[in-house]
Amino acid sequence: MNACYDALETRDPAAREAALLAALPGHVAQAQIHSPAFAEILAGVDARTVTSRAALAALPVTRKYELLARQQAQRAESVFGGFAAIGFGAAMPRVFASPGPIYEPEGTARDYWRLARAMFAAGFRPGELIHNSFSYHFVPAGSMMETGAHALGCTVFPAGTGQTEQQVQAMAELRPAGYIGTPSFLKIIVEKAAELGVALPSVTKALFGGEAFPPSLRDWFLARGIDGYQCFATADLGLIAYETPAREGLVLDESVIVEIVRPGTGDPVPDGEVGELVVTPLNAAYPLVRFGTGDLSAILPGCCPSGRTNSRIKGWMGRADQTTKVRGMFVHPGQVHAITRRFPEIVKARLVVSGEMANDTMTLRIETHCTGPDSLVEKVGLAIREVTKLRGDVEVLLPGSLPNDGKVIEDARSYK
Image (tube, rainbow, N blue to C red; front, side):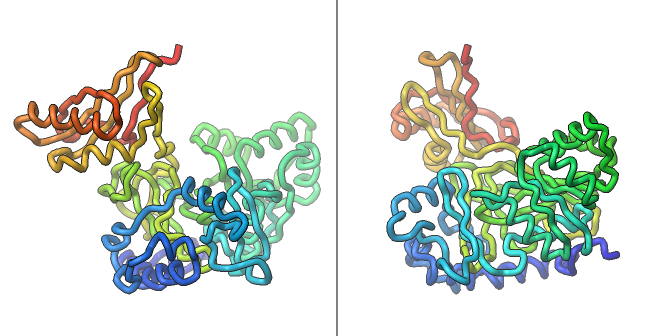
């Protein structure tokens, strides 16, 4: 049996990159022509010139809160805020709602959300029954997994959430090959089965999403005969990355262009540096361009030992939106960027808010090669005041001194 879902996963990395970049101008044009929102966001952009990562990085990042704002402002004319390239009817069999609410369309493409690849990596094979405990109402998680399972050639039991004893009964009687859902809910089911004295020997594998899956929980399942893997997918983008038996990071999906950018900006960071995950999915029905997930991650070096040659990310490493309130004023990562871009001498920066609430202080820690920092400190201090309308101290550090954790603003205050 093949170790990979298809030949795309073992392509030469240069061939993959060439294919993705060759498809990029058409994707940008699709967004401009069929998505009124991107017609506005990308006004003046010649899609034919967007043929490199540098050209892509010059385009604006659209973040989830901006998508929500457009949807809310245009509810009467377009529930999707002008982002969808398809409308109600045969081209859109389902519509879903995520918290906000943000409404997401589902297109008709086979495996629209592209989850079959992650299921295969987790050990699922055609002809098996999958117990799907993701929600089937409002949010798309249940449908995302079901359409992927069907594309893989599997049968699905649409279990949904809740009704733990019934979940145990269905698993015992239907004998599914494995489970798809959150790890916490499978743990509840397994514990309930043990309490009831019901064996679930058929459930030997699982694909998890929606929650963290730490090694301790992985080992807990392994001790009970269940080999669990995780995937990273969102309602806006579908599959972004997935875990393989190598268990060394998450391999990127074959139909997304992923960038890691400095939080609060659209500027890509060097490989290995933690930043915000920005994704361009090659999806004609919902043609998002440089969609900021708000999640932190980093690119891992080298290829996956499983033989898959695509880039890997470390997985979820926190949230990029580090906006905080200081002395009654909101300070956000974009403001830190607005300060530091005035000074080419600054390599990296982090704003640390310390002290106690109502008696807090701001210190901008900057990495620089500058040999005469006194004048730079004074200038940066003035820039802090101009941009944030707050006073802040400046601390000069050598390059490499700040942690590689993606934080642009660190809230170190005491909340006693």
